[in-house]
Length: 129
Image (cartoon, rainbow, N blue to C red):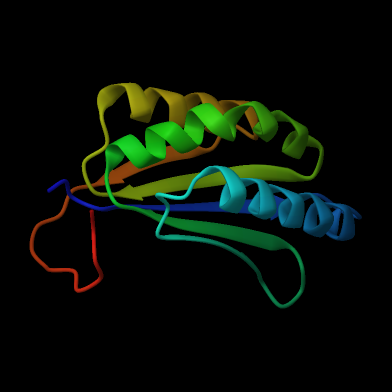
């Protein structure tokens, strides 16, 4: 059984782009839900004043996040007009190739940083296939 991967990215929303971003994110969520059945969770959050967006997804393993980057990745470039990506935090053990893909995404969407956090201790009670 592989270790789950939790992905969290944080972005600054460009002035005047909140409503367009909300529409684009709803479309992306629908696409991901329809095309990535292995994902455990995929959620988008906005702060109260509409200046920040956080996207959190939970994958059963590195292969699931790699699949997400291949399938949804071609759609990411359109978000550059809406956001400046600040950080991508990944909790778990992604492959080196996946870390490079995330660095490319961070560069494309705002020159954000990618940080990998390796599990020290803990457990999960949700089913993982």
